[in-house]
Length: 109
Image 1 (cartoon, rainbow, N blue to C red):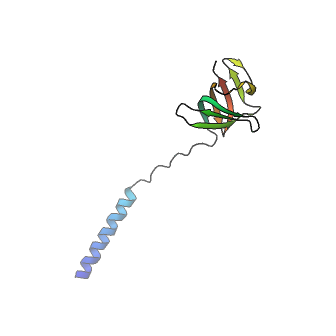
Image 2: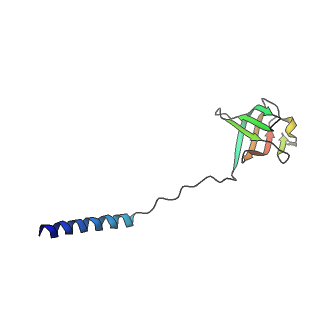
Image 3: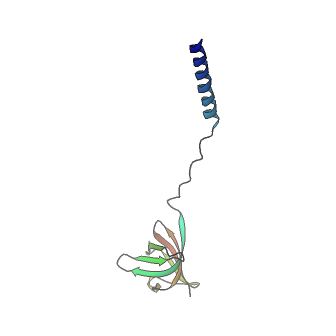
C-alpha cells in the first residue's frame, strides 16, 4: 500500500510539473541591433588622422567616437556643401555613422 501511495504521489507531482511547464510561454527573443543601423553622433572634433581618414569626436557625455571619412561622405558646413578638408579640431559636428563610416557630417557654424 505504501508503495502504491508513493507511486501515486510521484505521478501526480510529475504531472503537475509537466502541466506548469507546458503552460509557460518561452521568453520573447531579444532584439539584436541591426548591423546596418545608422547612428547619430554629435560632439566636438577631437582628432583628425589624415593617414587613416579617421575622425575622433568627443560627445557631450565624454564618449570618444571614431569613424572613417571617405569620398562617399557627404559634408556640409551650415547649409552649404563642403568637403572633409574643412573639418578642423574643435568644431561642433553632427555625423550619421554606419559601420564606423561617416555617411554624412554637418559642421556647425
